[in-house]
Amino acid sequence: MDINNITKKIFQNKKLATTEINSLIELGDPISLFYAASKVREHFKGNKIFTCSIINAKSGLCSEDCAFCAQSRFHNTGVKVYPLLPKEELIQRGLFMAENGATHFSFVTSGKMLSNRELDKICEAAYIIKDKTNINLCASLGLLTKDKAQCLIQAGISRYHHNLETSKSFFKNICTTHEYEEDIETIKVAKDAGLLVCSGGIMGLGEDFGQRIELASLLRDLDVDSIPINFLNPIKGTRLEDRPFLPPMEALSCISIFRLLNPDKDITICGGREVCLSDLQSWIFMAGANGVMIGNYLTTLGRDIESDLKMIRDLGLEIIDNFKTKK
Image 1 (cartoon, one colour):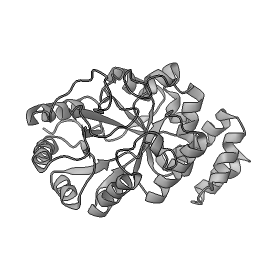
Image 2 (cartoon, helix red, strand yellow):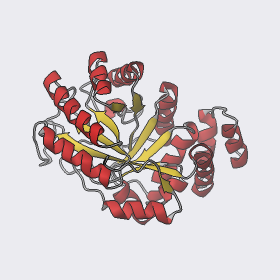
Image 3 (spheres, one colour):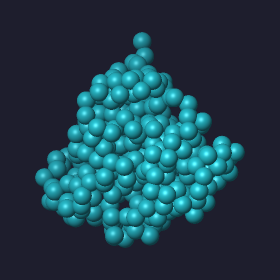
Image 4 (cartoon, helix red, strand yellow):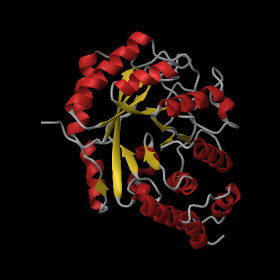
């Protein structure tokens, strides 16, 4: 399979078949794969990079049994458990991230779905952050209804995050407490309401490359706007605590697969990159990403924000819309 013909086909807005992606993987030449993905990223996204950030707004005691999750009530991980944080704390964190290089900020909560009272508190915080900054606001609050989606939009939240986590064919190995179709329905509800949609998954759960291609293809069919890619960072006490880290070149190849199948979408690299990629973290952009999460994750630490911002600058890339607090 000729790499140049693949990129040419993508530039002509032609969809790649999964067989073509399989052929690229079978070449066993990750550098050529990265080259193609990098060219596609440059064509559709230029040298602009966005930086997202999150707050773990409600932690622990989740009713779902996701095999990787430190916050599931099915696991004993010693994670902090607390109800929805005070509105003032949510606001303070949003303002801090706006001042420190984040272009996007997301409220993330554990559990299957928020109550109306909890949702009101999120919306109140969002409204104030949006009034004081130009940062893009996102939310990841579990399953979504049409009415809840409208409340988020009215508060100034423009994007909804809801990961599929893995392919449909592998999902039952990861979660048994809800159906895959429920997650797909939430994506559709968010899109129908007018929200941008951020949905991706975790690489290294035990899936194979075919199942990664399956997930990337489904996200293309769902026409999501942004795809966050995480790499498993095994947490002691979860069912996947003994799984090894993905090798760096395999992890980077995952990014390239998602870029080639979703050429014009935002692709963000999130949790697990520090442990999987180590000194190769800057390669995420060569592999096709155009976004990176900065700051800490839900239950694990990220590296310091300035190191990530310096990494982007040192590569000659530009952070888009680095919004500061309004004057």
